[in-house]
Amino acid sequence: MASPRIEVRPCRSEDEERLSLEIHNAVWPWRAVTMDEVRSFQSAVNDYGDFLADVDGVPAGSAAVAIEPQRPQAGFALLTVLEESRRRGAGSALYAAVSDWLRTRGVDVVHAFAAEADADSLAYAARRGFVEIERYPRMLLELASIDEPRVEPPEGVQIVTWAERPELARGIYDVAVEAYADVPGGESEEMESFEDWLAHDMQGSGDRPEATFVALAGSEVVGYAKYSLTAARPTVAFHDMTGVRRDWRGRGVARALKHAQIAWAKRSGFEQLETSNEERNEPIRRLNAQLGYRQAPGRVLLEGPLAPRPATSS
Image (cartoon, rainbow, N blue to C red):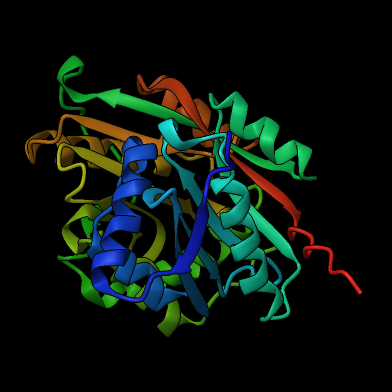
């Protein structure tokens, strides 16, 4: 039997980019995104590449690769191969293309996600030298199963939305600087400047000021919590970040912010809330469990080498 004919090419048109996204969304339906969100991500990274793989002339897989400002020492890659096209070489060809793209940019480490429940992909990565560095189980809350919670912040604290108080952006950033550094896995990341953080983390296509909640003690921001929303999953609100200033932790600020988020989501017609906390982040995982979130399989972040260059004959 003849070997399959595999072709990998960079996306050079909007139609090819959309096909790449469709393949990603088919493989990762619970991480589906829109093209607007892809564009938002592209604007937030240092460099970006997108590839398609055909097997015998039929679209079989795609790969997106980026160098992020927070982790410039490694390339972040999303490799997806349709279930019916696996074990035919498309994944290896995409891995080689991503590796060549990173090699020309002086990067020799790859970070990539695999689904916790996808034993085949995890085994594929392990055979190529990838190791687990972070794990993100999902936690889900079905809003129809709960009553709207009362928002009861600690004494001296009030909860407002960023839409109501847009001037609080700098105070939110100051909390984020502490919170990002304390999230397991985030200690090695480089914090962006205020202006870049504001553009990339707070003003992306999925960010809405009315879905961002701020805890104030007097005029000081002591915590915040925000959703990321996507038209690809319009009934689901994704918890993007919950951060509390270090000297205010353990006082009930995070719980009050979560209650405000849940109440807003119920009133706004959402059906499900989803979060994905690194498994070492015990405080927020414990709080989510107390609020009724149930655990579901999530993602594993892997780190590995570039694919070796093909041997050349002399």
